[in-house]
Each structure stands twice: as C-alpha cells, then as structure tokens.
Length: 551
Ligand code: F6P
Image (cartoon, rainbow, N blue to C red; front, side):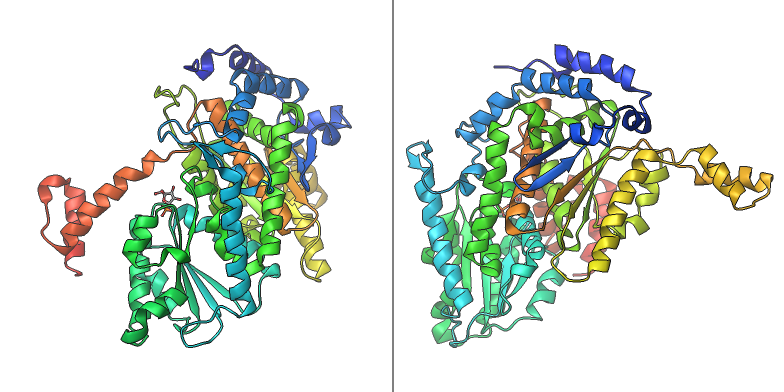
C-alpha cells in the first residue's frame, strides 16, 4: 500500500505545531522544572543504558513522536522484517540479519529454506575452522601455524569485522595478528604484504557479490604475491591452506580459484552493512574465538528481543530513532557526531557511517516519490577525548546545531584507574557543557572576578559565551564486552531501520553507489588505453590527461 507523504500525516502536523511551541525551550529550564527528568528520559536494555534527557523535548514530544511511529506503521514493518517479508522492495529481498544471531531452534522458513538450519550449519563450520586455526592444527603449506590473517574486503565486508576486532582486542588470540585491506589504492595492500610471511598468513577474501572491483583486484594481487613465493608444483595445495572466501556467490569463488570447501557462505537476505553477524564475521571469530563470537551474537539477539517486544515508549532503538528524527526534522540538525569515549571503539563512527548513510541517505520513498522532508543526517566522529581538541569548538560555538551521541563503558579493560576517571569526567562534562552552555552574564561575572577592567570584560565576553541548549544522548555500558558490543551495534541497526520507516525509505538498497562504479571502469580503460574525450566534460578530460602522463 502506498504511504501518504510524511508531511500530510496528522501526527507529523501535530509535531510541527508542537515544534513551534518548543522553539524557545531551554534545557536548563526543563531540568530545573523536573527533578525526575533523568529518570523519565532514560532507558535500559541488553546491558546498555541510554540517557536522552539532554534533548530539547518533553513528555508530550515523545507522545507525539510515538504517535507518528504508529501512524507510519513502524511496529508492523518491524514485524515484517523479523518474519522474513521482502521489505527490500527494489531488490525483492527479505532482510534477515536478525536471524543470524537467533539461538538455534528458531523456526523461520524462507522460500522453503530452513533459515535456522542453514545459519547454524555455517556457524558450526566457522567454529571448527576457527578452532583449528587458533589451536594451531590448521597449518600453512610448510607446516607452520598461522600467525597473520589478512581480510580482503570493502564496505560491509570490511568495516564491521575491522571495527569489532579492534573493539574486542582484549579478547584476541595472542598469536594471531589481524590485518584488513580494503582500498584499491595499492598502498593499502603494500603496507600489509610488507608485514606478513607467506608461510604463515591466511587470506580471507570477503565479498558478498564477489564482483566488487576493489576486492577482486586486491584478491588477485594477494594471490599473485603468494604464488610467487611457493613452489609451482605445490601451488594448488598451498592455495587451499592460505585462501578462504566468504561470499554468497559460489560460482565466482570457483572461478577465482578457491575451493568451495574453503568457502563460508551467506545469503542474499543479509545486506552488506548488516553482515558482520554472518560469515563476514570470520575474522572476529578467528581473533576472539567462537565462544566470544557467540556472545557477540547473543548480545545483539538480546537487543532484537527488546526491539521486538518493548512498547515504543520504552523501546531503546525506537527512542533513539525518534529523538534523532526530532532533531533532524525540527531542530534542523544536518549532521550527528558519534563520540565514543573508548579508544577501542575508534572505528565505530566509520562503521555507523555506512550503516546509517548507505541505508537512509536517500531522497525518494519506497514508492518512488520524492521525499518531502530532509532525511539522513551526515554521521561523523572520532573517539573522545581526541575530538575535544579538534572539532568540539564548532560543536560548542559553531553556527550549526550538531547533536552528539556519547558512548562510554563504566569499567575499563585496563588497570589505569586515573585515566578512566579522567575519561569519564570529560565525557560527562562535555554533555553538561553542551546542555548548559554559559551565558554572557555568567562570563562577565567570571571575568570581573578575575579583576579584568570593564572594557576588557566587554571585549572578551562574547567570545567566551556558550549558547548551550545543544542536544546529546549518552549510552553507557558496564564494560565493552562481546555481548555489549553486539547490543550496541544492534541498537544502531534498529534505530536506522525505524528512521527509514518514518521517512518511508527502503533502507536496504544502495543504488547511489552504482554510477561512480560504472564511470570508474570507463576511465580506468582510458588510463590504460585510448582517451575518449567525447564522453566527458573538460574537467574530467583534463584530469585524465594529467594522470595518463603518469603511466
Ligand atoms: O558499493 C557498495 C557496496 O555494495 C556495499 O553496500 C557493500 O558493503 C560493499 O559494496 C562491498 O560489497 P561486497 O561485499 O559485495 O564486495
């Protein structure tokens, strides 16, 4: 059924009216007026705690947002996703990453396929393979245990495993070093190959389609590099010990020269950016072991259960989505900063960039109509406290309002208590500063107290004033563990899903990446052969001409 446009719905219009009232709200006053604000606007699920009280909203705002979610059919769409309906309507596919983390024994059947049996059969293979590599029984072609694992993949076949391996480094096997090569830029492959030994390196070629240009080129390069270093007569046997594939495309991996016995499959109902739970997570299972990989899946499953069952008003992913929607639509927030106050979540903002922007960076609805409101904000960020000394200036005093998600673990994985106290103090102080700001009168009082002459006080006061009233969420967990990390990722996956439903987008295709790929192929041919100036504008021709001189 065709969805009405967002702005024509009664609940969106009610929000528009409410937003006019809310225009002048100051969070300082909202906090002063309600001593229970923190308790009222916080939520707990799957080992995560979300404080969303430092947003410019009240109980009525949430009621109206929840009404909008109901009118847009969020619960119905959520249930359709879990049930395996083909909600990816431009590719006619189900969306079942949640089935990858469901415990054994679920009963989903999709087109006659027993999803649970297939998922767990692959998990069993992952378990025996990773046990063998980690235990030193899987040996390289000269009989030595594996020491280095190189994952070759890009986008969802890189960002998830890379982010998770880094985040869970405290759980990792001491003998195994994980490397990730994604970029077609040869410097990436070069930097990795210069560190590894062909006798003890395992390459994982990870690509859902097994056609992605960057991955195919990198995989061929790795294969050539490897074959140049093994005796020709044992090449096939050696390849079988050092190259495995993760893909949905068995024909393409055979053509590449990988034995299907060394292939870990997944399915077209797993989107690339939702695939870390599938065999794409093989590097994670190799690094931390199957037990912790299972905990990672279980943490995500716990969040799935919460998302499926909790009413909208107490549903953490729904709340995160609705608050973000409010900030985007009614506070004109063009971007969102992700600020993990945990160095091991260094790659989490990059991971969320693909998850959110590839899912909801769209301007036509599922029905092919132009959207009538802004959609996905830009997502960016760096770990705290580093960001504080770089771009937080703009967040505090710049002209744009940029909501921030602070993420922190209450307990560290190290014993440097002093560091951790400083880290958390900074995290909480920043959210307080964004909310409160500092008025010009407070600044004046400070400067006067320092004994500055009146004219100096007036000269400096505007520069030292903070407008405040800037929204943020804070997500806390006891520790960063496989399970809480799983829950955290699932939280953002479902947040992205809910926002997609509010905007009536198909969050599971990514046609916007195609045009550049086609043009790159054409230009690559021109760099190697004859230029075709008629195909381009003067800028592109000029750039191609300059680059041709370099080859
Ligand atoms: O081009 C974008 C994209 O298709 C992403 O959606 C995907 O995660 C990435 O490329 C890699 O795709 P594949 O796993 O098929 O190599």
